[in-house]
View (tube, rainbow, N blue to C red):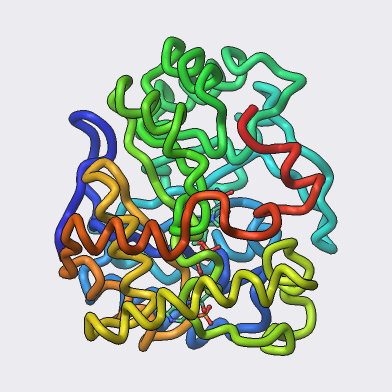
Length: 328
Ligand SMILES: NC(=O)c1ccc[n+]([C@@H]2O[C@H](COP(=O)([O-])OP(=O)(O)OC[C@H]3O[C@@H](n4cnc5c(N)ncnc54)[C@H](OP(=O)(O)O)[C@@H]3O)[C@@H](O)[C@H]2O)c1
């Protein structure tokens, strides 16, 4: 497995990480036994970068990931996040970036993960009611105390990233980036590149839609969050599927899968970018990791951009409430 550096002089991680959210939450059912096996298989296949968050499965995902990786702790780079508060039944209770909350949330994550140190600790969403300097100040205390090694932000706006970076170096920004979500390629990537911050691309497969594996709304299991996602419901579903079908044709011609083409596109956007596709299945994991070996020519990259031109996707990436939490 190839590696990439997270930020200037930052840690080395596998060029493709594993997003662990879907094995506990949001995308339909899964079982612990196969999830544990998948996590162990990922390590054997060379994945060193694992992404979780305290909100995934309301803590269950951190517990599962920590348990699966406990024997290989020193070989892996564990990233988790705080800030999205949830009730035990899953209801979202808002965003919290208050210093005392940051410290308490970290203690809980350390306990669930069963580790002494978190490698990369992100603020999951910026709390608009708390100055970023205060939140990052508390995160910096965690570094000083040896509870966290590197700091990250998720879905923060350019000026927030700059302010945060003045308080303590930010190692990575985790934000959505894929063929159909290229908003970060303006101000945000220019800022992370100027400051030497790594970019972790989440939902690089468009939450599964860009793989071509979802062909009708009934493909979603009951409770799957995507069934009500603006891009994957109503009239937008058919519109967006046509875009994916055109990528499928190109993938077939190139002899790769649609998922691999989508991932290769993300990887080609810069060596500072590390995608973290999520999956519950070994077959997809193997397929996704193999995408690191696919090189796209300039002509192929332009052709892909023409197939899914910026702004061609119908629907926002989150509902109205979710959209309000982005880019602060
Ligand atoms: N910071 C944030 O706010 C934020 C938000 C969302 C996600 N994330 C992180 O980013 C990670 C990845 O994002 P994501 O899981 O939302 O979306 P994603 O990686 O774009 O897509 C995951 C979906 O694609 C399917 N899939 C994966 N590989 C496939 C393949 N080769 N062929 C066909 N289908 C395939 C998976 O199916 P199966 O599950 O059935 O295998 C799953 O439903 C998450 O796990 C999480 O760690 C962060």
